[in-house]
Image 1: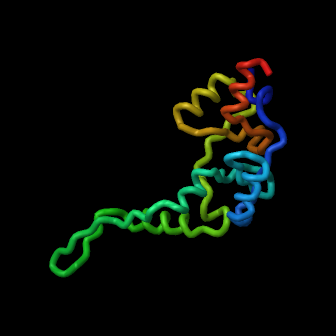
Image 2: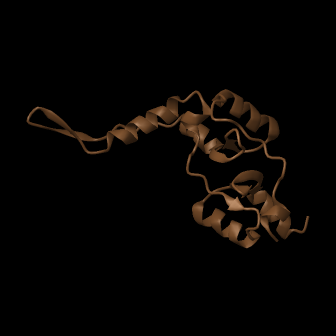
Image 3: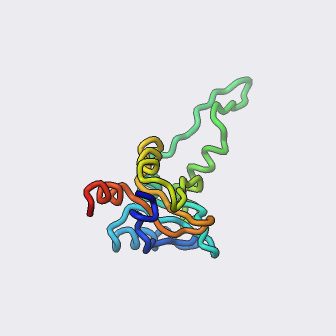
Length: 149
C-alpha cells in the first residue's frame, strides 16, 4: 500500500499568521493532535502539534554561566535562549510551529512511512505531490490499513 491509498485526504491546515488560540480550538474541535502549516500555494512550511503547544508551559532553561574577572561567560548559545522564549511566548503559529517537517511523497510505501515515523518519533506525516499538500498519514491510518479497514 502507498501513502495515497491510506492517507486522510481532507486535511485540516493552518497558515503561519493564524493565532495559537485558533489552532487549539481546531485541535479540540476535530479531536486531532496536530496540523500542517501551509503557505498560499498549499506547500507545507511547518507543522504545529500538541507538543509544540505544551512546550509553551515548560520551565524556561536559563543558560549556565560563570564569572571571570567581573565578566559573565555564558556556557550556552544565547540564540537557544531566544528561540525558547519566542516559542514559549508565541501568539502566532509562525512563532510556535516546528519548521523542519518530515513529509512523504504520495507514492511512498506504507512500510517506509511507518519506519520514518518510528525512527523520527513522530505521529503524523504530511503527504505531498509535486510539493503540494495532498493528504496526511497518521499512526492511526497505518494501524487501520493493517487491520484492513
